[in-house]
Image 1 (cartoon, rainbow, N blue to C red):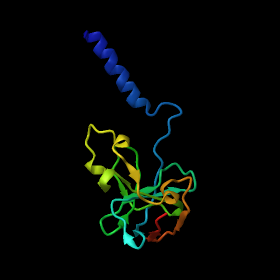
Image 2 (cartoon, one colour):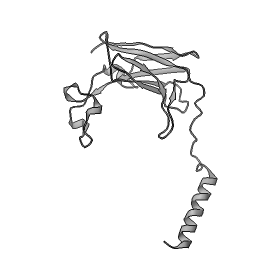
Image 3 (spheres, helix red, strand yellow):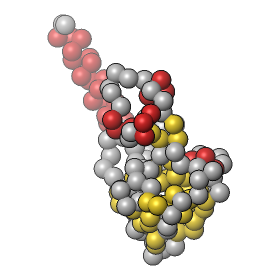
Length: 160
């Protein structure tokens, strides 16, 4: 590569950095103060481990909400969903949320983490084991209003 091409490329990159975001691009939203939210998810009165709990904001405030994964005892703790490469932020912004719970499993009830890297999960018998009425944001019947103090939100589910 010629010296002139390298210089021109370097100059372009420097100008792009100095210019900031391209016009029309949005900077990440300012999340603000978060509050702790925890709880326990049960299915038919038994802890539901390895499930994803997601709080979807009802207002379109520019952020994606918060999520957590349940442990073997069904306990979850929310963290804000941030852009790729950003550090997770514990808790959630107070507000109104629709809540989903999903738990995808491989055949033989194995967790998704046991899927082989070269295996297509949809061809491996992946299925949802949480009730469908709580698995999708457009169907869920769960909603919570998180106050400024945060709180504990236990989620008792029943099999279909």
